[in-house]
Image (cartoon, rainbow, N blue to C red; front, side, top):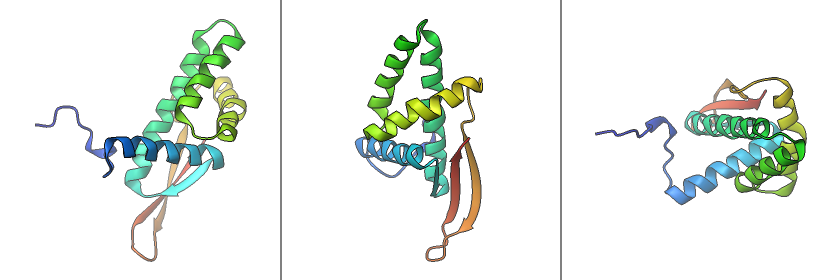
Length: 129
């Protein structure tokens, strides 16, 4: 029986490895603003990115003062993103952009690029909107 296991979001790594792998992907994605990867990894990364940014937007809007909101968002970013420069980029560039836009979902666009030459794997480019 299946019991709430989403096969689309499974990567063939262990539980701890998967968490670190997805966090690494998310860090690289935030750093550059776009990333090219395979369809399975793209689905996982898109879901994780949408969940991450929607959590930040909800947390920011939950508190009354800006200082409290920023402090709580910084805690979430430090727990998720590797690297101080990437964390600052999330707080200073991406978060204000999403707060002004009144968006709750759909932070990532995906584009099909065709196949790789050497192994014929499909490529997908993800881009932060």
